[in-house]
Image 1 (cartoon, rainbow, N blue to C red):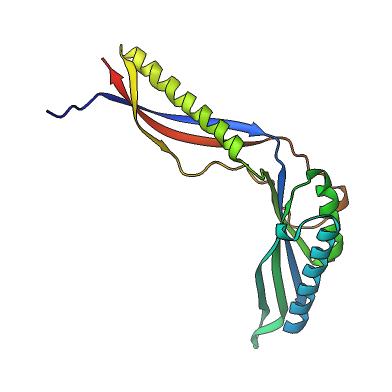
Image 2: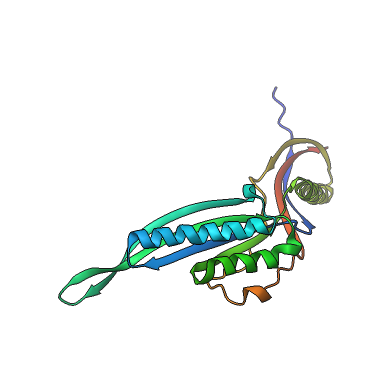
Length: 212
């Protein structure tokens, strides 16, 4: 005869906090020019100038990556003429990891100065270069939360917890929430990045056997 034990399941959520040690910055370059070559060439020159400024401020080349290169025509609709090309827009994005947070304001100011009015600050986020220790503490807190809930319900029903029958961790961790997106590069030299604390959250589902 197959034994089907009585079970109880509980969901546990745990959060761990730590001071972040990594800042990820997204810097865009947009160049509007009369010709494709002009837009493309100037966008490349601006990106190169920004990259050079970052390296001068001790940002490693491995922490700088470019993506999203795009060149498109900008059009305007005119009565009787339809759509006409008014110019060309070249754009690209640099993703930068800053590992020395005390230098982040200087690095940001240098990047904006190098790119000039063609710079766009797309946003930044604070996190961890190695999140394994913080994630482990979040998992431990999630386990304690699930077990406390299950033990409470078991006690209310006059039983106890037996062995764990299954444990499922929800995929991924809740990452630190990025700071607000910035569309214009203004007053960059007075911009200060405060690290504060960032949190990581883990959620698990656990099923226990109920003891008689």
